[in-house]
Image 1 (cartoon, rainbow, N blue to C red):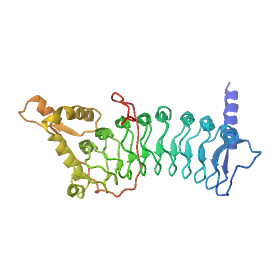
Image 2: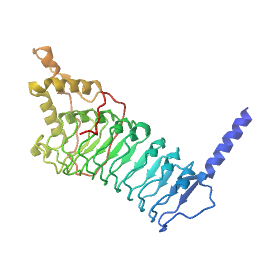
Image 3: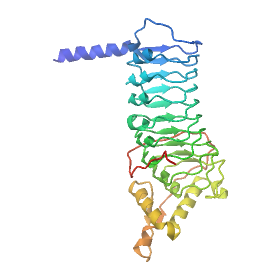
Image 4: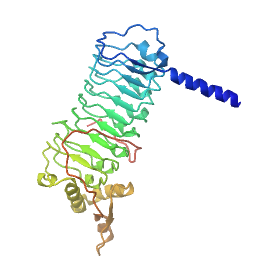
Length: 339
């Protein structure tokens, strides 16, 4: 038995060593040449910087062991449906093409960790993309024509970076508070379209960088003051009223203090609404505070949270980063596409 296991292990190592990295980039190819090479032994295939208008269905269907597929900077208008056969694919780069939609079959690429679809003509993402790609860590869809992100995005439980800048986003989907691993979120430069942020953004307790610059946002959600791990906040180019620009210019720490103070002194009409959010913020360890001691009645005490401390951060940055992350739904799902 031990001999058989050793032989099998040796055989697997030999097969792994046989996997090939094939580089056909920058050859001005209009079509792919016929090759005697067994496509099943290809681990990395680079077809970038050519003039390819399509990728044959038969080709992707036979790339059984491909881990990285790079077809950026071509003339592709679509991806083959057979891309769903790439069960081992981890990195897919289709940026710099003419793609208007991704095939639904891409959801079958369950090993996918990085998807780069920047600089295309995407008008929408597959509605159920987040239900299957649970290993996705980085989603880059900047410089497209997206008007919304599907609500299933909230199920991308490994997502760390979401870059959706330079689109036509009018709102962010319900359930984004579930992206508990999200570190970088960039929804900048949606210009006249994006004018609000969800209050639940304060539950993104892993968030390090938030870029919402060059939109039409007038008010930052008070819950942003609870993001104790946030190190960079870019808000340039927005018609901000709250917090006012003189507060913004004083840096992130002051902005968070302002938002926390505003949360603590919400008008009575907003108390009930805010109380439920404060409870969630505390429960999920996003809000770092304690209850103010006083002789007021218990209901009022519950709403008087005071920040214990603030992390020192060097001001604001200019827009440049990407971003975001994911976990399980914490609240009742509502449709984000019907607006």
